[in-house]
Image (cartoon, rainbow, N blue to C red):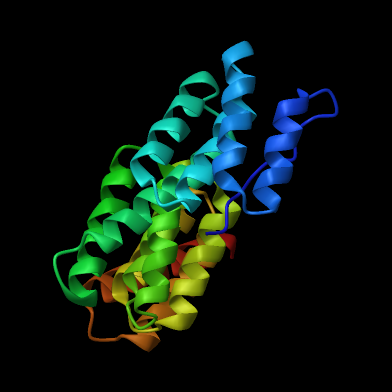
Length: 229
């Protein structure tokens, strides 16, 4: 299992450094004991909790690892390694617990991503949709919902890039086309919205939503040009 772990600081306790060295040698049981010694003296040493969780995970104790990661996040909610490791653990556990077959695993993971997005747990949602792209590269929804995550997060550059990626990979997927045009209008980039609407109408002329947006923006463009004259 690949974990995102921080290196620590020069003034970390000797037992922490020993635990990290033991982990590197894959002596996880001994590493856990070293981290426990640190925590017995310094209960708020978050790095020891994160490394202990990783060792527990490597030993197959997923419940113990989850508990320790959550404890680390209680003490330091913005700890990137704890959050990423916990997200990966939960996603992997959900996949393994799926009732049967890859389709059931995909459905479960898709539901998890949507629920994470609804709760504004953006990193977890992105991780779920990233895993889904690996499951089924022919499904346009993971890329589409990745764009929605960035849009909900307020990152306009990544939203734009994600919609473009979705449209490039799946030119006939109308939801991505429509949402991208609406997003461009909302951020005030009407010329780009008009271009994307025309491109969408060329790619999927039979979709009524696309036709409506294309006509609406074409009419607005013609009005603007007339007023300029």
